[in-house]
Image 1 (cartoon, one colour):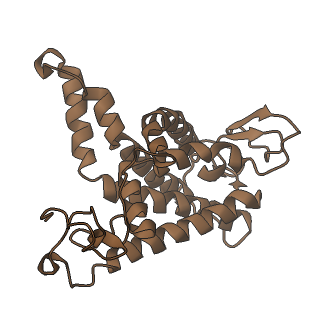
Image 2 (cartoon, one colour; image 1 turned 45 degrees about the vertical axis):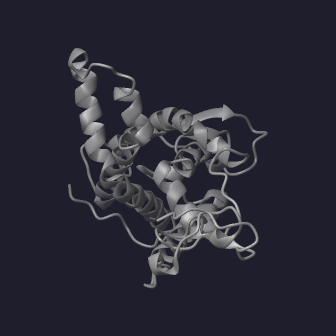
Length: 275
């Protein structure tokens, strides 16, 4: 829709009609309620940020045998609640007095914050850059991700590597949910189902990542010579088509998982048992 640039001095003070920005004829701009999508996205992300911030700093009600909140796993501080057979690794001594969630959340947070889908979501939802397709942008200039701090988005692949072991620990936590409150194996409750759904969505989102797709099949000149990597690349590509859906589904599921543990820990209800 770019039809060239406006001559100097003919543009308005802000937005795409500023001098030097690509000009858009008014007939090409949307007149529908385009703002609903970025507004809903911003509201959803704000809700999760508010909830996760509260739970991360709460430092309480994150364990109810055999369930441990994914916000606190693995628990790396000396002040963690003892979890029998759970992810207790006191790598940080008694000098760490803050919530142990702050030690681990940086990895999944960094992975999601630099994710290609989430970038689009919060760029549009919070910065209006751009607000939506075929909508006049309010910013005078555009530099993309070539300057600080947005150039740091390039660390996404490294956060992908760090997210893998975290997902592995959460898988271990899910296996532990097949115990009862006395740590006896061979039992399952509603919480087990909640954790199973969450870990499936976590892995699906992680493996649908653009970086994962590039790692398993990128830079190959001849797929025929690498049949295994080609198959993995194909599977990752199929998941990648649903990356947005998986991003939101896993974000909701991890919050529901934490909320479930919180409600059990506070005595709001007892975990229904299937067997």
